[in-house]
Amino acid sequence: GQQVMQIPQYQHVQEGEDFTTYCNSSTTLSNIQWYKQRPGGHPVFLIQLVKSGEVKKQKRLTFQFGEAKKNSSLHITATQTTDVGTYFCAGFTGTASKLTFGTGTRLQVTL
Amino acid sequence: DAGITQSPRHKVTETGTPVTLRCHQTENHRYMYWYRQDPGHGLRLIHYSYGVKDTDKGEVSDGYSVSRSKTEDFLLTLESATSSQTSVYFCATGGALLANEQFFGPGTRLTVL
Image (cartoon, each protein chain N blue to C red):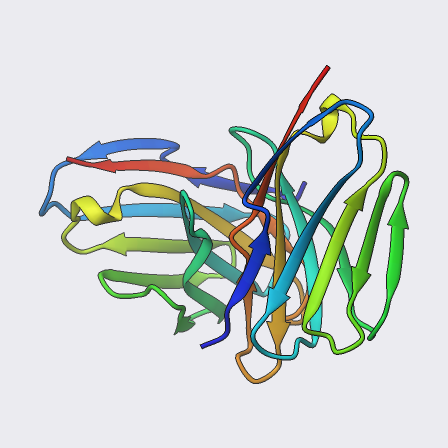
C-alpha cells in the first residue's frame, strides 16, 4: 500500500535557526497537506499543495511540492519557540481515495 | 477550529470489555474519520464515513467497527478491547471532497489494561 515517510523523526534547534522536514511518498500524489500538532493537542491543517513544483509561503514557513509529486518539504526560517510541535505531511492519491499521514517530525526549539 | 467534540476524553478499561467512542460535529461536514495515533506511527486511519450509513475501512480496521446514523455523529466501537488498542484516538471531519483538508477533534486517550 501507499507509504509516506518523513525525515527527520526529531530535530532540536536553537531559536533563530532554520528547520526543514522532508516527506517522501512511495506513489505519485494528487495533493499533499501539512498539519501541525502542538504537544498535547490535535493536528491542525496548515496548507495544501496540488500542482507539480508548487511553492507556497506562510510568513516564515515555506512549503514545496516536488516536480514528480512524490515528495514535499516544509522549511521554517528563524524558528521561534511557538514553532514547537510535530509536523505531519499527508498525501492523497485518487486511487487510494484516502489521506495517508507521514510519521511526523517533532521539532523542539530552545532559547 | 470546526465544532468537533469527542467523548469521553479519557477512558481506562479492561481487556475484553466493549468500548464506544463518540464524535460529534456541528459543521455539517460530509466526511468523518477515525484515526489512532501511536508513537512512531503517526496517524493511522481506522474507518471513515462518506455519508449517513456509508462507511469504509481504513488501514487498521481490524477489531473496530463504526456507525453513522446521523450526519453529526460518528461512533467507533471496540467490540472486545485489547491492550494493543491502547492509543490516542482522533476524530476528524472533512468537507465536500475526499481530498479536502481535515479538521480534528481534541482526541480521546484510551488505556486498555
